[in-house]
Amino acid sequence: MPKRKLRNKKSSRRSTISDVPKTGTNIRVKFKNVWYWQFTNHGLTKALKPQLADLTAELGLVYKLYRCTHCKLTFQANRQPINGVVTPVEFAIAYVPAANEVPSIPSALDKFEGPAVTMYAANRGAPLHWTVPSTVLNAMPYNWYETASNAATFENTIQGYFVARCDNASTFAIHVLAEWTFEFQTLEDPALLTSRVRQQVVAEMKRGFEKEDKDLSRSRDSRMRSELKE
Image (cartoon, rainbow, N blue to C red; front, side):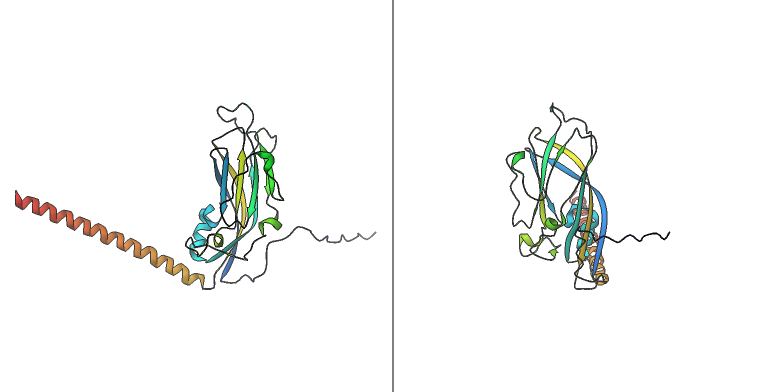
């Protein structure tokens, strides 16, 4: 009896943005990193930008534009209790896209609402895996954001913010396993930009050596003058 062929079902999940061909002027990177979160005064805000990891920060020196198209956070289960906290630590998290300024932290856990909200409790029996909905992550006023910190306006460099609040602990730190997909683009040849970065590094090192030589020369001259006076 011939086997029935299974029909490929179309996924309703939104895929990575593919509005430009992958050429020498753009690149897509998928990677994971351990993200350090420090809560202060019951709250925390973390910007979504290339500087959140060394890999993307270095690519930001070469490419002019970026965007994040996938973000998944994993919070470990059964963490040790925080000193001075009787009940397990629990906090709510929200992702705020396209913020023109640093968003304020909600005053209580029940004030968190929206399509990109989750909640974590330290006494979970399994890790919490949270993927920011692509419809929210890609809800951007611009197709691309600038990697340079000296961009014309604030909103040109920050794609969004993660906002979190914990009611039963004021100050503590956790490590979050993050999974990312970043895309970078530039209108110039990346090889040319890389050579410029190298030239800039060499020039800075040269200036440093020249400064050291001048300092040594001044020190030697000062010592000779003091010896002549004696």
